[in-house]
Amino acid sequence: MVINMKTLTYKPRTNTSTIWQRSMRRWQLYVMLVIPFSLVLIFNYFPMFGIQIAFKNFQAAKGIWGSDWVGFLHFKTFFKSFYFDRVVRNTIIISLYSLVVNFPLQIIFALLLNTVVNARYKKLVQTVTYMPHFISMVVLVGMVFQFFNNVSGIYGWIYRLLNEGQFPKDLFSNAKHFIHFYIWSGVWQELGWGSVIYFAALSAVDPQLHDAAQIDGASRFKRVIHVDIPAILPTASIILILSFGGIMSVGFEKIYLMQNNINLKYSEVISTYVYKVGMSGGAGSNFSYATAIGLFNSVINGILLVIVNTISKKLNEDGTSLW
Image (cartoon, rainbow, N blue to C red; front, top):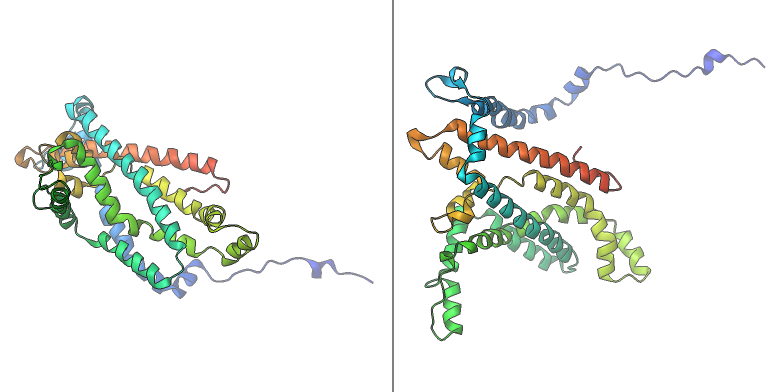
């Protein structure tokens, strides 16, 4: 018997369609990407062209290219400024405080609500906790001031009820209370909304894992520890990495609305300081100085993001990371 080796030669199947032909078959998907891709280019990448004014003495009459080059002058000015220690310290403290409180609470809330058997009650709680997220920031700050008013607020009314008509101290007159009002009002507003992604991760857990653990005698608490938490760890790791990547970025609107001359020592952060020196000074606004501070802020965030991502990749057995 003679075997023809030519007939046994492996011939890989070739795809005759080109990338263009495959793309044209799915042209609807690419059309849908046009708008988000354009928005990213216009609002995220195109403004990077203006970063160069951080190294120039920008004058609107001369334009970006015509303004005089000053190098790292604005960065040196900021580092030597009286406000440098204050705004950096306040930014880090508020960011870390918010992260330490919000990150575990959102996970715990998702785990607790996931154990609820009654579907109607679960949906009711989800709806009630999601709603504050959609409240305008101006309205939210107004609610905080109104609720904790020592005269006409709920806080004042309850205090007088329990203390025979005596008026409580004005909480807003103590500057150190600012950070607590800021953080815990944010917890109330974002607790439900921030836990959505963890609900999604928990919904992907195979019910057979719970059934097997229950047969082995595991209690509900042990099933949460050994089934639910490992299932959401990759998601939690990514959220934590992204959170550290924005540790130097505190939301501007809420801080600015709650800020006053009393709590300025504890409420002045990088974002509000940049606004004041760059936009609210009228003819005296220093756009180059504000841009330099913003660039410094972004560089620190980028460095932290890379460091935390590297640490997460090494510590996690599955190598969970952004890249």
